[in-house]
Length: 485
Image (cartoon, rainbow, N blue to C red; front, side, top):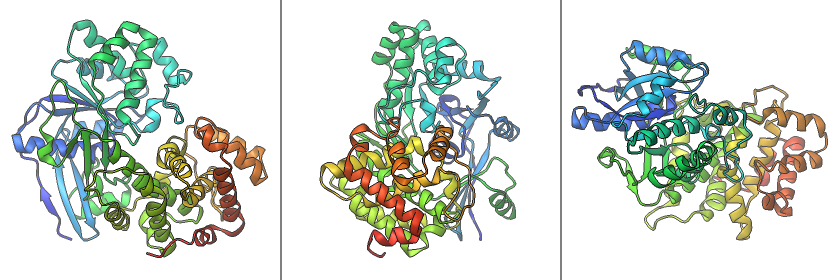
């Protein structure tokens, strides 16, 4: 393989954006778009200060050792690779547990030159009830931020404290741009911030409601967790970079154009600036993310390790085609020029990219936070319209079985979820499928009441669970009678 190399040659940028969530996705997605922008302008005012909010100082240290430069390996397939050097991140800060850079982060967010704060903190990082979108005021991290507002631990708390400082200093508010996979992610972030601010000072909450823009966005790029194998593969290509990330070549970013204090002209860098992101959010959540979750739980139960391995099996490819065409697409109201059939085909093609080694266990994380927007919203629409829900019901049944902590062959796996302890207790308490399914569907933090009590939905999930546990994954897929690819 002879990769195409794109070195960084632009002048250093000044910081105009703060990002919360220094993870692989941010470095392979938002930072790459800003890198293109800075390359076009040979620098400029839109450099990024990026903060790690998790308990991992090592990445911050690695970035600092490398003068904040790193490489992004963009794979079209196993033989086609672009190596991009990125220097859009001008500063890295550690604000995780015991974070020594918290005050520096809050100070940076308070600077007038910072006009945008972006976030990739995953769904659980907002501490919202997955079922109704309200801030979980009783969650321990939120209770901490209410009691200690100037020393916040959560992303909403950091936003509130930084905005409070700007409010006091009469500094114009920055725009808050959520880049996490949630429907109406701008409005959900707005609700979290305003509800938390109201606990502190109603006048601050009123100012935020009036002065702060919370545009929604949709982000799309498959960015697996880095592995030793991938680092070694890059070393064979002459890239010894412990901060590198690998991803697919495809990338999409759709943003609601609402930036009162200005923004980069990133419409020239491939970003779609639109008036309404909602249709694109729903399309991606239900078709791409919904398909990924189907593969994650059913594939894991069958002992499959990666996305490409699963989609390479005809029965799984048929599952995804049936789900996208018959259950996800009918729930979407897209612009007239959107071809959902072509989008589904492109997703299946992307999923077969075996160069990424995208592990199903990574996708399976935090299912309690993901199911409502990926499957349940669509299932409610389908039931209201008299449509099909068989694939979705099978996915929910597979997720419930997955939370037991082992696959159908008895091989154990970790259940990485904020509600993992509750799930384990339910499995220990209920040994009959009927009572187990009823207990899971009664979790109102995940399942909306009207869906949980709908006999069509509960019966479909119970039947699918019985098929999975009695006859296995392949039999359950065959029962769907999905069309072949």
